[in-house]
Length: 591
Image (cartoon, rainbow, N blue to C red; front, top):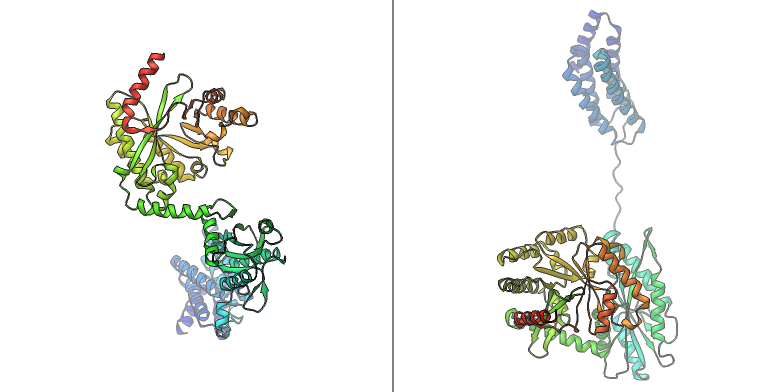
């Protein structure tokens, strides 16, 4: 307090000497307002802030040093920050007004050369704000949390539905009284990962409950077996866990009732759900197993239904067939054999020529992967390529094929034959940095020229390219690898993306040209696509040409080349060199 009185007296003496009444008025106002505010303000931090601002104001009146203005600006900012933490809006408004007046008066001092002591007017306004009682934030109300019971911990939106054991008991009891003329239907919901990730698992549970309610509404017929639940209520739908549901339908009166119910469920679930003000669509897939074999246990039926869904991920409704189990057992056997696969002795490359339509010369040779299976004989790639992916061998197999193709291309060059070779890459492994660096190294080690190797990849890979994928394709082009899209026509396409594909070749699937005798409906479509790619400098090749009539048809479409059994069946690459020499002799003789 003695410091405050000394500053006030010194400032009063100063202004008396200059005969200026304004500084005297400001000094008195600051001093009185500060004393009164200190007596009223309860917040200790704001009380200290008012003292500091008052002392700085009096110091500016007394000394007029510019660096005191900086300290006053910082002190005002601190006071404003503390004021906003209170609940007194009038005091907050006065503090903001003090800060604004400080900015305006200091700007006037710099631009209009006004006296520096006018800045103290903002301190007066700030001191006046201290007359209003600052309310400190109230302590948050303590809410006593009641402990959860075990039932609450286990409760989910689907708790009321019967579980797997209840469904099993119902099936066993019904089978003892009736013939096994029924069907087990499994319903699987998809699309919940995005819901749980973006709007929360609680909303995902709510969406799951709404989906189950829609499904139950379609099962009100008497032919659907009633299942007792833990709540003592009979339900038609059982929850197997996760996103899987099931019900059992009697087929004694209607043999195809289960198919009708699946269709109805699929239609009602196609309608969007409204959860958390968001419109969400749920995908439903279903499988069914006819319980016509008395030796099938309930566990067998459940595993069959799961197998049908897992083995056909692209289909919405999948009936189970015994062949699925045979295929699964064969796949499991192949996976065990792939774990000990010797690439050099068991994998082999075959070749098949691609013939230009203009002069019937070879455009390039396509290398086809074959597996010399010890029990099933020679298997084509489409028989085991999915197993290769499951076994995690996609990249090693692709690297082996690339290196083997480079050896064959180098051998052709040493014989003076300049003929490109194409290889098939069946997955996204070609879009990885490691793969592209490997290809670049192989090209350099074998002294291959740009265009010596062509990589064929499926169309759906190009349909889903992101920016990084497009960059990887550009890198392959930059190192001299030509690209070919395979299977055009086997998978759905987005025509808007087709002109943007930076590829050398496009292969039209045999399905589009197989029934050439009745091609009037698709001729214009295929011909239009061919013309579009020709304009974009992409060479269109028709696959699956087996007869002369079919060759004439694909030539009429203005395609660039053709490939198929009409020219040659796939042959082992061991005899490639001798086959090429024989081909040249025969066609030179014809020409």
